[in-house]
Image 1 (tube, rainbow, N blue to C red):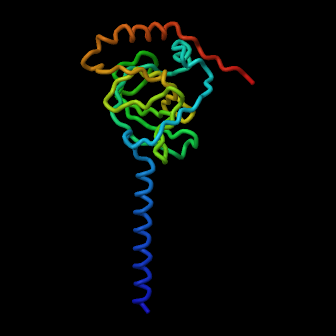
Image 2: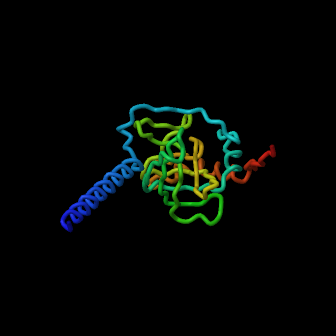
Length: 191
């Protein structure tokens, strides 16, 4: 009798271990970054924004932080948070804060868009996914869940080879600083 109980217990434990392993494997594949060379197609979705995102002064007025940063790691892509868009998380090293206070030297930015489960790149129209080890001017806001978030092409301005050629971007950075001074403040309307 004891041998029968012991076998049932061993079988139960083995089944539990296999189930946990399979679940862990599924989760790790579910949230891991997908290399861009494996993309099947690009799906661009027209977005409606509360501000004119193409107007940098208006976009800055809607944002909480503007800074120069370097993408250090594509952390994960989350498919649960949004059915239309995957959400890609990036670790970013903050190089220089141009607007906002209290930003840490390393932050995580939530980018609306990414590679979905069918390996389609799903992004807002005209957008792109930033690349690891590249520098950008980020124009981001704090979302309701406390994350820094970006959801359009105008929120990440590429600074190719910034570390070795920072002087090439002086005018562009100065223009962003002028737009910060002349930003158009976002005032929500009551409905």
